[in-house]
Amino acid sequence: MGLHPHRDKRVPLRHAAAHVTDGATVALGGGLSARLPMALVRELVRQRRRELHVVGSAHSIDVDLLVAAGAVRRCEESYVGFEQDLGLAPAYRAAAQAGTIEIAESCCVTMLTQLRAAEMGLPFLPVRGVRGSDILTLHPEYAQVTCPFTGEVLVAVPALRPDVALLHAPFGDRYGNLHLEQPYVLDERFAGASRVVVATVDRVVPTDEVVAAGVTIPAHLVAALAEVPFGAHPCSSYPNYAYDRAHLAEYAGAAQRGDDALVKYLRTYVYDAESEEDYRHAVGAARLRELSAWGESTQAWKELFR
Image (spheres, rainbow, N blue to C red):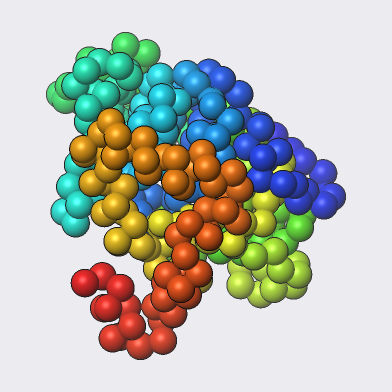
């Protein structure tokens, strides 16, 4: 856990992403299609990061996009995919089958335990959940310990201290205090265990507003903050906007087809969109307004997911 003094931590997105260097272990906040740090992910792709070791709970387009762009060496997640809506993660699956990335499948509780060990300054903590599973074969760093009180044989998992945690919040203040809507997934633990925490927020607001809503991640854990409207798109950042099913389908289809289709997606939304302002322009202001209006009525959000 790095401690960062009280100061204005607002930086441009490219400077925030620069905390991630080639070969770093990068924790990705959020989960599935909610509150993923997509603006930071796109910026890592623009900056041509390589050999990353990504860790997280259950993720989708963030991991798949990094894999598609050739940024990932090792992936340590409990799940990567688009759930029943859009199916498996195409680039991740292809890379796993081809052996071009290392797969170290984990489970959420095990990773949570590893992060807690790091937060407590312990070298390891014991777990039960992975006993008897093939997960052990993917993690030679795990060991067995015998409880001195009961004689039970448990799995000892080492502390996990990511080099950088990338988080996205609906809003925060200029000092780095962040408010998250539940579920928090592993974001709190990533913030406490990682050496550096970098965050994006849809809006920078006065500190009083963050305090009134509730400070989920305190400022002293955050090294840098970038204000990026729609920074989680095409994923959701409630209550600000819903996830963009059509855009996720566009990406998943391009990644499934591969080659020219995937290159076209990356060119349109990442490489030629040299900033997040360009990205929002490519997505379209009208579409972003629709996503922001999800809460106006039951009919409004139903229409988004047809």
